[in-house]
Image 1 (tube, rainbow, N blue to C red):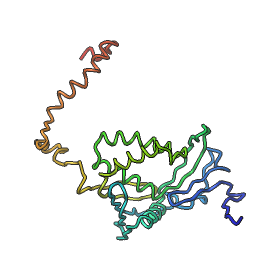
Image 2: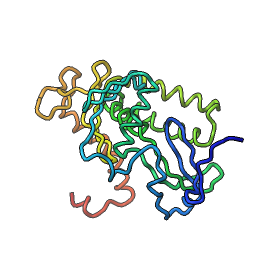
Image 3: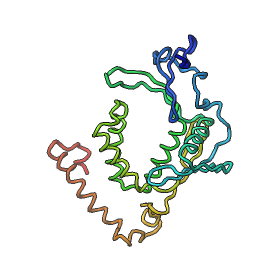
Image 4: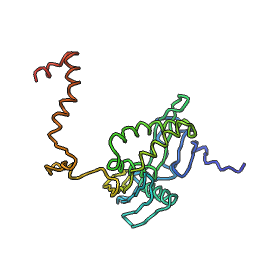
Length: 255
């Protein structure tokens, strides 16, 4: 029917390719101990073959959506959604980033080995997660993480249009509305290293409040480090009761 097939007797594995990633499975890869051949990969070089000089990029986000990429090494700038993502695939791929070799669990319960290339997606995920660190409240991140695992489960099982997926997507989108700012990444031989982040409008980070050098850094929100003594006593009550009623270890009795 004129449909190109990439499998050959020597490369007897299947390939599914799209903008986000390329996946490989079946054939020789069904043996989980069989290393994937280097010639198989289409989107990335091996970390060993990547350049010896790191490449620095900056990714900017607005409400969790990447809106701009700047290559700090050569001043290349990309803004459109498609060109931005294609460029991140290029940068990450040439630096050996984004390869994963895993054994996963199919919906029907069968274990399956898959090899994946997700170069640009790896950069975006690392940058987004890092920016959340200064933009999102701790408890929002905790609840969002629960939704994230459910999103992955529903997506993997094919329930993209299910009502529960609609609920999860809306919750995650709501959690991302304050993810605004930029993250600087170092790309080097298969590694993505965050070297800096900033958010002018949504940062919850206060250097004065977090400082170990400024004695009155928390004065503006009525925070005094000595308050931690009561906090520790309250939280230790449960532990003291547990050990008292279950039998306290000797070393605790000594104290």
